Image 1 (cartoon, one colour):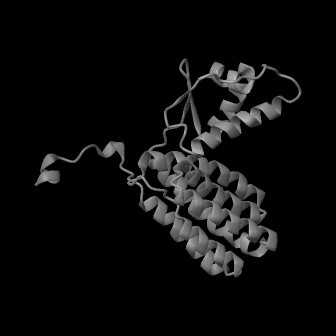
Image 2: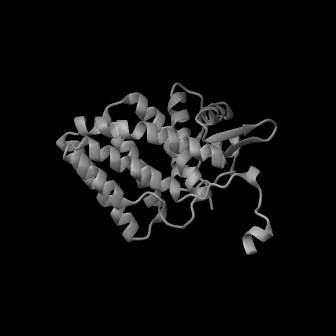
Image 3: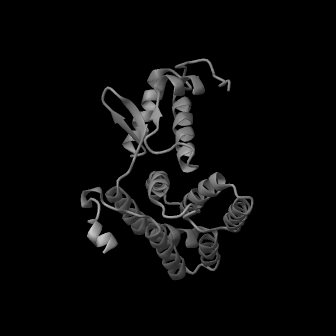
Length: 234
């Protein structure tokens, strides 16, 4: 396969190139096209995006700051491999901020935003019906980001973008079943609550939704080790 490349440049659009690299890597993680532990070669990424190693390194360092990438001395950058403890912290953080996000969304949702939510749910259902797992995963994460955008709370939105990317890695590593962890029906119920401006129900639905996603994960601590055979077979 021939990879199309762009001329390398550190022109004034350098920040745009860094953003494109960050967005491209993050999107690939959200769609589970980049797996945890995948090496992110600076030269290869530079060829793909027509960017210098300096710009690629800047993008990877930003992603590392967000916990999506890990950088190892003398080895390079890799897609992060979150631990079970990391997973619990991520979902604890999401349970703290997303009920507040949906509160704000109930207050700020305009008819245009509500139409957009409705179209998004339709896209999620269409992806599930055609068996497009990658699109379903991406759209599931985008639903939560969209609700945060509707909320108008820029700080929460910034936090949540990072948490969604981390959650995608966690789900990929620890999900019990090979099915989307973020159900469209749950999302539709949340949209209905937002449409009705029912803040209490929207909060409850979001909280139970996040709790159910985490419950579907097999978060076994490595420190616990394997169970004795007597406990497993006895």
